[in-house]
Image (cartoon, rainbow, N blue to C red; front, side, top):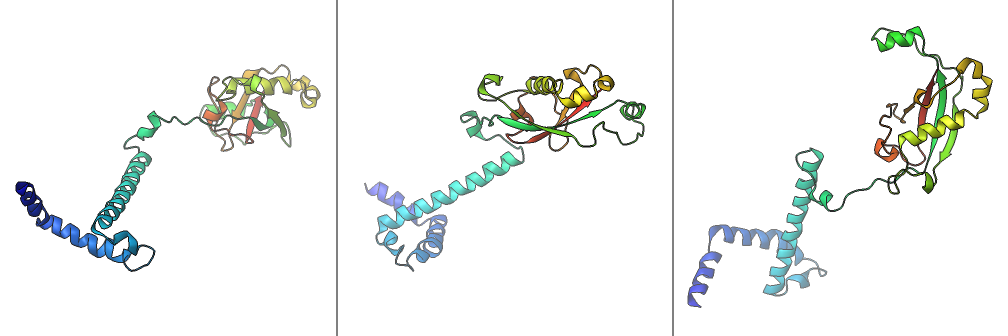
Length: 214
């Protein structure tokens, strides 16, 4: 027992421990004694010890979270919680589709070849905006919802029954689903027939843009 007491006494007299205790008393415990709401937390030696441990534990936990999320944001490492709690994006239940038609001209062919081309001229002065809803029976996956292939086919099927198609049928002729290009709200082309809309950044209620090439 005497040996343990000697080791403990030597530990408490260590310069680093003395400095740590002085810092704790001055900057942690002393401010707590100045208010009646926190003074009872340091009434006894045991309560002072518990209070100091809890405060330092909270500071260490906060520092850990800051370092962890900073590293994740900078792509230095992955959040270990992602392996346990996998985030599932909310499926897309309905979208608005803004539709217009564009004939491939010589200018567009030049643009594909990297040459300067004129601004494309759309067939409709004002695009058609139509609301498409998806029922659970139409989901390609019960959690992720429908995919790009389905919305392409759904818009194609609807367009063939629209007044615009019948009014311009002679000019448009026979358009296929592959002629429908979809862009997100930022103008990025949506690609990948098997990709779910939620994975392509399309959320419920978003407006996506469809260009029908004929």
